[in-house]
Amino acid sequence: MKCLILAAGYATRLYPLTENFPKPLLTVGEKTILDWLIEDIDGAGEVDEYVVISNHKFAPHFTEWAATCRQKITVVDDGTSSNETRLGAVKDIQFAIDKLKVDDDMLVIAGDNLLDFSLTRFIAYAKGKGTSCILRYYEADEKKLKKSGVVTVDERDRVIRMAEKPENPDSPWCCPPFYFYTAKDARLVEKGIQSGCGTDAPGSFIAWLCQQTAVHAMEMPGKRYDIGNLESYEQVKADYRGITR
Image (cartoon, rainbow, N blue to C red; front, side, top):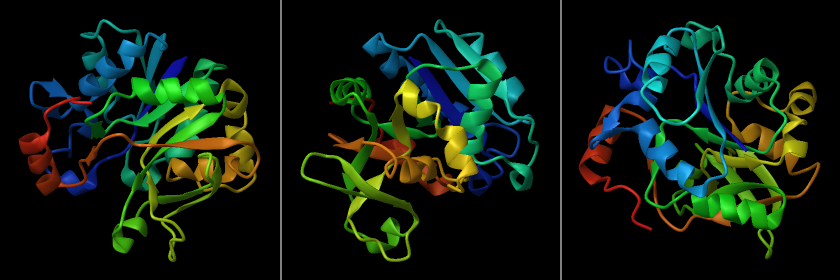
C-alpha cells in the first residue's frame, strides 16, 4: 500500500508563519504534524512507501525532512509556485500516480490535520470492507457543514452521495480529508477528472466515485484537529495530546 500525503497547498491563512515554510512541517508538541501522522500509520505495517505531494516552493523543505525519517518517503514536486497556479488536490493525486506509476491500494491524507485516534483502525476497516472508504463524523453546526464535505450513508455505512461545501446540507455527517482507495478505484481518478468531478477539494473524487461503485464510510472513533489559521494552530498546540484511542 502507498500513502499519498497532500501537501501542495500554500496555507495563506497562516501567514506570515507559512509564507516560506510548509504547514505540515509545523511542530505540535515535540513532533511535526507529518511525523505524528506517519509514525501512527506505520504501526499498521501495511504502507511500504509514503509519497508527499508538494508544490515547487516547499519541495526542498520536505526533501530535507524526509532525509531524517526512517520510512521510505518520496517527495513529488507538482511544479506550481503560487496559490493561484496550484493544481488542486485531485489533480495532485493524479500527478503523483502518473509520476511514480502507482498501481496499488492507497491511503490518501491531508498533511495538515491531526487525529486523537489511530488511523490503523481505519486501514483495518477498509481492508475488511474491501472497498474504497472514507471517514465521517457528526457535525451539528450547519455553517460548518456548508464549508465541508458532507456525506449521506445507509444503515450499512455505504455512501449514497457526497457533496463538497453544499449550500443545503442534507446530512450531519462531515467527511475529513482521509481516504482509502482500492487499487482498482485509484485507476479511476483520471476518468473522474475527465468526467468533470471537482479537482480543488480532495473529496470531490469520492463524490464522483460513490456514484460509480461501492464506497463505505467509517464513523470516527475520536476527534480531528484542523489547523486552519494562526489561532487554531495555537489552540491545537495547547490541546493536542497525541493518539489516545
